[in-house]
Length: 630
Image (cartoon, rainbow, N blue to C red):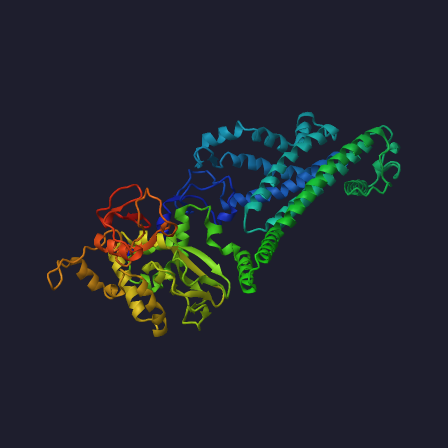
């Protein structure tokens, strides 16, 4: 195999490439999703000249800078409405500078590519970009919120006015707040930032803006009442219009915060009808705002503890189940240990993390995590890369706490396991008594494969010594993957036989009695790969007798299991024979009839399937078929 073909298949999962300067995918807005199967490459695809990618790092910095200016606009617009003298003073020049930056952003928008929602491709055509922006609602609102109306009025009339009309026109700048909302939406999805603190800052910002706006508008009501002394602030501060701006602002914020928090000391209260109406509206608004704040904060706190609640509920269910069924203390402790480990390692469980991902991505991750472990397992040394890739893709990862059984002796061999990390003990029971551990296995070593390959009940119990991670593959998936790879199957057989030869005598002693129950499966037939090939290719033995035909459905190391019955499929039988007998399929029909005679005590001559079809060739049978011999 060439060097290029022996590389990990992971790179081949990525076919197409997309453009843009993206340093971290976590910072990409959900509206700018790359196409399926793409990787981000800054130097591959170039946009047209004078076109900016919306996720360009420099453009993102520019947008962040504008958000800072938006915060100023959100504070200044209500403030200048309430306190008109500052609108034509120092803040006027600051407003002009800020408006200049937003005017520049309007120009830049004509050069920013956009994402076509029908194709999810970036459009970099200048004409299409301009038409899309001009025809959208954003363009007129952006222009209106950027226009310096007072300066324009002075240019055309030569006079400077500070009327209320300009104060309300300046409120159009609050349209820029959408940029803050977009920023928080992006930060909430950016895994580099804490969701809790991002959400918390957003709630604080909403509260401060509500308090500031309500206080400024309440002060504006007082300044426009026909009798200034008959107002909420005029009854406390004489001639308040000529006092310091910051004195009025302090009173306004004090009233707004006291009202929002429902404290209501009563020192500042509504005096005239207009103020009372505004107070009612503001208090109704506060009900909704308070519900919004409490709901969000409660959700953030509960979300951080939801896994703890789930774990406590699961443990309580286990305790109730164990008590109701009077389970032994040791078994109950194992159940509790497994449940606690499940929650502690929830973020590491492959099934839960990867279940929503496409199969190609799951396979690529599995290759990265477990390929080396599978390659180091003795059973798969020397097999082809194709089989390794297929095996790793089908394997499932699991964690087991210390002192927990992974495999029980004499259970049905549904899976075998490869130890990724940790250690396990191999044990055997005799007459219900546990013996000393036969051997200890560690990383890249296998357990349960003897029962799977021989199709016999597991000969050993396997118990973890400490926290262990294992990967497993099912009995049926293993057979299906190995069956098309005849050469790899022979390598696996050879590795398995060599492993059996190298087992400790005390371990071989425990396996020895199992071979007696296999009947037609002789372990000596597998002692060497060369003997298997000779047996398959030989025309006859030394006496001239024909050799039995080899099985074509599965290799001899993976015998087919069938269920035999001693009656016609349409006949009812005595209770003892209803369930049938599970046997390994022999090499010939004559041998099958002999086994039936031995199992049922009577000789049959006809073999049919459940649908009445007569069996003439054993090669056509499959795993777990029901055969009726009579």
